[in-house]
Image 1: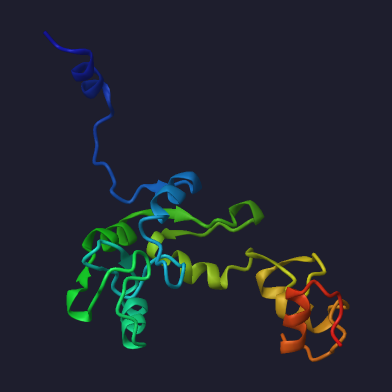
Image 2: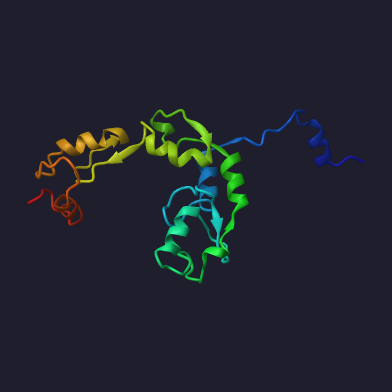
Length: 178
C-alpha cells in the first residue's frame, strides 16, 4: 500500500533541484544571525572561523581582536587563543550556496547574488538608504550622503565633512555647531 507521502513524492515534477535557490528577506534574516560576525556586525567574510565556544567570526576580525591583546571571546568571555580557531565550513558553505536579493529591493535594486557577496554589494548599492548624521531627518540614497553633508543647513560649521564638533552636536541633539 502506498502512503500519501509516497504519492506526493511521486507527483512532484522530475528534474534536478538547484542548491542555489534564492531566499527571500525573511528567510535571510533567520540565517544571518548564524553568519554575522559579532565584531564587525557584517556577514562573515575572510575565512570564517569558530572559537572553542562555537561562536563564529570573520577570520580577520577575531585574529585582530586577539592580536590587540584580548584573550577572551567577544560573545561569551571564555578564553580563546589563535591556535584554537577552526575554519567554519558550514558558514563557508552557506555563504557560497545561498542566494538572496538586495535588502533595498523595495527602492529599486535588482541585484541578486550569493549571501557571501551581500556586504560588498551593500557598500556600493546605489539604492541603499541613509539618514543625514547631522539630524536634519533627510532620507538619502547612500551615494548622495557625502554631497548632502557638505550642504546640510543643520550643521553650520561649513567644513563639509563630519567634524568632531558636528558629531558632538549630533549626539547631544544640539541643532547647530558652535
